[in-house]
Image (cartoon, rainbow, N blue to C red):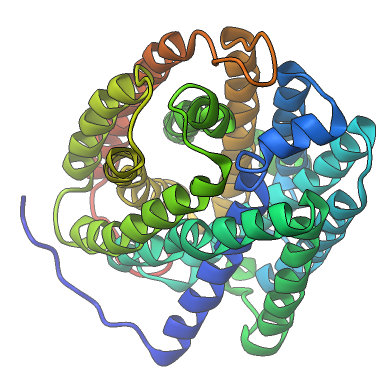
Length: 416
């Protein structure tokens, strides 16, 4: 693996990275908190595991639809303004989650939140590609993805504490308070992000969307993005239910699991990000994917396990899964041309959400729980399906990597 040239960050870029990491933190927390409080939510609202699967997947599908709907327009506006508008909608949706008192209300609130979360997430990734050079994006993605780690270390344990101390509604209201502060930070600190407007063509929004969709190089990236997401989404919604009812981890010990897992992510993600900018990104992704596959098989076959062993195992398991993200996302950010970047990222985000929604539904159809306190059945089968998705993703990311290496002269500036 040949080391690449390292570029230093400006003070403004460091500030942008911090805010984007915080933004990623609340987006991830808003979605992931559903799994840890899933047991409480199911019992409080008296819903089935299948209905819970729909609550999770409704967010994903609505985010997917909004991403496609906005894709044709994504390159026609200042990224900062677009981010502020859709992030505000995300805040409103999360507030409605905190006010929901029935299955229909929480389902509707998750749909609204998903509509705005999808575009917010894709705009975040587009801004990374707009502001940071290609040979910096592995490190940037590593820092931004630390938002996942912070959600595990701080967000989920605190959210769980609030949910158990008060109720699960209060957890969403806590997230609303955080998002308002981040929205103000974006409004005050971000400069206009409109360089891409200089590359605009005269194509209307729908023509622009169609041209982006039919580009064969882009299609490989879209497929890779889909399979990158689907595996994790199949396991995640039911992981807490599995830990509580199969592994016999007490509800009050779940924050320990999430805290230690998040701490490992905070250590691993920046390291993987730096390695992704220094060495071959596909090889790093491949090694992480193979490791994640082995760990998935072990995880989904666990029975009653002591807490300390589960803590160590979960740290290693999620480190392998998260290590796939930085190299894959850095490669994906290099696929589109500057004038197509917003549309490409919006479609990619939509496909991620669609894959996540399908993954949640498939998982809900595979696993089965006879009662609220019985063991989760067929989780091992779900593990095999997840590994198949991991293997397919390795193949597709390889095709993306080969396509990028076949280009005559890669550009390392923000334009690429």
